[in-house]
Amino acid sequence: MQSSTTTEASTNAALLIKMIRAAVSSVEANRDTINALNVFPVPDGDTGTNMVLTLRSVIEDLPDHLTTPVPDITKAMARAALLGARGNSGLILSQFFKGLAEAVGDSSELSGRVFASALRIATKNSYRSVPNPVEGTMLTVYRECADEATKSVGLDNPLETVLANVAARSLDTVRRTPEMLPVLAEAEVVDSGGFGFAVMLDGALRALLGTDPAARVVRVPMPGGTKFSGSVKTDFVDASVEIDWGYCTVFAIQSDKIDLEKLRAHMDRIGRSPIVDGTDGIAKVHVHMEDPGKALSAGLEYGQISNIEIANMDQQAAGWAADRRNDSAAVRVRAGTRRVDPPDIAIVAVAAGDGLANLIVSAGLGVTSIVEGGDTMNPSVADLLAAVEAAPSGRVILLPNNKNVVAAAQQVPELTEKEVRVVPTRSVQTGVAALLAFNMEFSLDENVEAMTAVAGEVGEGRVCQASRDVTIYGHEIKNGMTFAIFDDEIVSVGRDPLHVLIKLIEGHSEDAEIITVYTGESVSPDQVAITTESLENKFEHLEIEVVYGGQPHYDYLVAVE
Image (cartoon, rainbow, N blue to C red; front, side, top):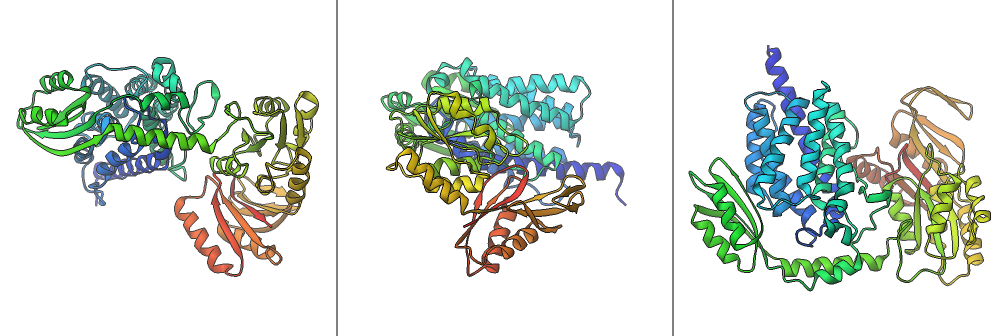
């Protein structure tokens, strides 16, 4: 029989592995956004990718069994993170794992106190690894997270509370990075590495709390509550390609004894933006060089070199600039953003869920602004009016996309000097269908007529779980049960959301030409795959499309056309 100490150690090992895997998945889910944010110290599209590759090196050798002691796991992760670190973001990220290993020591304890200690050590080592630390970067996020963790631990909070407080603080710090680093303000972005670490904390927290899914798309915390447009400011992009960046040179040095301070000073003399750190006879160097051979030759003075990676940053910057220009051309317009060439007609639409928001922007041909809202989060008349006033046109079509928002939307035309029309879309499903009827060549009234007609032809369904015992439309539904509503009538009740969804479609597919299913934030990627396969097999005669919606509250939203 296992002792209580052994059982606790095994439980902690399982929890640690679960949290790290979730953190990696979270960064992977947000990689493209992290890439798009990067402008410091070199504008390229690799920060998110570098963080993902660094994290993958950490989990590749994680044990599948739980008999491995926690100290051995953390030491292995620290070594793997250092050797596998990619770019400056990867090297700084490796400091967290080094701090975790040191904080755990010879114990198997996973507590708020250990986590706070890991952050303090990571902060100290990160600032020390860079000859000229710059605020407004990942270093700042580490430091403020360490401060928050220390404060939370001082109140005797458990790990769950400490991590939740730190995760919230990380996003707040990221939001303020442009105030500390002028290049971020100039590019109109926040620090990419800091955001990547905040995303990592979000995944770890959700795994710790058992929230499903553990990995989700995290909204970029922009200053002033604005939304990240998906691209860097055009002027900054144009200026960046005129700079000679040289080569990003990364390598490891192995030796029985390495003077890290001497090595760090050496790299600072011969290159730019050096980051140097090491552990257990291994040093990892990241430095920007005009001639990468000089860095490698210098490294040979300290020991054997390996894990060599050299990237042409001029090519990276050129590729980054091309991608950013393509992003701008795609015109992912949000409320409050600007267009160089204002559209003749702008659209303001209400939506909740990142997938639905992106889909609506795309369907609106780049002229759509999003107002966050929906069930339990109805935007006010003032919210809708502000979005209309910010829209880049004097003529606006307003899509409430929720029956409870229609009345508020209908107040807006009288409160603005702009020419505003309301298409009374009662759900986001009908709103998307209406947007597909939008035509830039049509007049305002022609578009409103066409969009209203299409929206009226769409049947809309919802599948969700009851969080308490409720009576809806005369049906008594117990807490935890799943039910489906179609056009305001309950059509199916059960325990399995997918089974309930299938029953909904079976009852309303006879005359359908196409059925679209939008998956909610509560539906895991694995379940999305199962849902897609099940619907394709069950309804071979139908055109069914499963689309990520990311909406809260509803497992599935359904549009029947």
